[in-house]
Length: 584
View 1 (cartoon, rainbow, N blue to C red):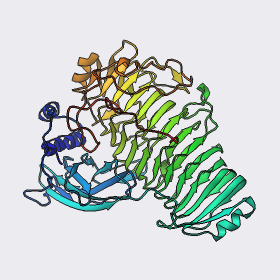
View 2: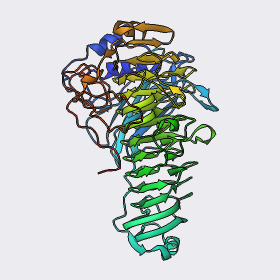
View 3: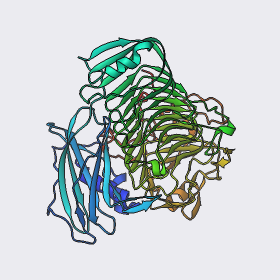
View 4: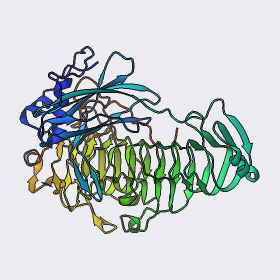
């Protein structure tokens, strides 16, 4: 059921997202959220009066769409005109089709028409539904409104794709190295090509499956492939359970599934689905690169190579993989090679010893969702360099022993959203040394921890501050926790230098930000004082009663409890960590 305060809080969250500031009335409403919430009946979004606004300041909505739904999320994109002052908002309700009760979604974000790095985008309201179930139909309501005039409700029905499965009534064809190519040449939709234990050369697949009847290639016993597996231009082909001394390339493919493989040996990378690829499902693979975790390896100019998993195109899911020893462990494409990079899910991956970026979500057009990942011992945890209007979401991620930056929001990144993350790094707790303005970021309920820094790969992540956001323009940051292993607590925000918690709250948008320490965790976390040591992941769970417990602001659409203020960071008090990586 919708909560009684749904409309008020949605309006507040949308207002913050679009203006980058929190009016006093809205701030008071966030603080005064009730501890207990009485249930209300199902509520439809309505307008009174209904209709588009008047140009130039009123909003004139186009048609809302849900492009490229995935097994884990639904993107919502609503093109608009008018709204010259950029204050239009959009509220969201959704439910499983046929259910009585609505769930309140995270408000859409306002992206202003702009251009950057050779790409341009129009005015829109855009956002996501998170943690959706696969193979499920959802009813969605979206209401766009503008204080300058205009209120329109549109409804749509969206079906999420199923998790790729081996067809239950598929026909199995067992084969060995000598007959593999002939067996593949004869295979088609619904066929299961089962490889006997043994060693095989690299191979290419030239036939397709269908969405209902995929073509499956799987191992029966230990199957080692020495060389490249090519799935170029393929549709609905699955590769499962192989040991690959080489890489798997699925460029310009549709609906391929690469699941449960162990991949290593090619310095160029492990799994590739780029160019005009669409809707790949890449899960539970272990992808190991050749880069050694040491000082001369890190950074853009370091002695590093390859990308563990790299994608371009829309609708991909990259989840529950383990990747290490690469320049970038997970990546999208950049510059002119970035093709329609939207509706992407990077979820619950275990990443370590990534010499440049653990997750490089660069040139995301909109609705890239980086969620629930665990990152250790990497140069940069997560990159959006740049986001092209947004939103690019970073939610519930955990990162430890990060040398340079928790988030690399560079090259004029626009529209990044940081919610409920926990990051621990060397140097400044939260730093964006972009050199040029980054715009319209939105951060809530994060934990940023730092300590003494150094220079690694020619780059230092330590400016002597705990917060360094000199190049921010129009961002909104609040309800975050900041801590250092040292006593220093000074920062810079835009053109303001400040000291202490009072300075943070007066000089920045962090009106409810807090100062925290490493003792907030269930087991007091040790600062990673020795770079290039092989650190295991620490315990990120929060200690009940710690400063971070109950210090957040409630946000809809993220599965939070209905009572009490949420905790800061990636794991709520009493919650078990979400499983990550290729293990079961």
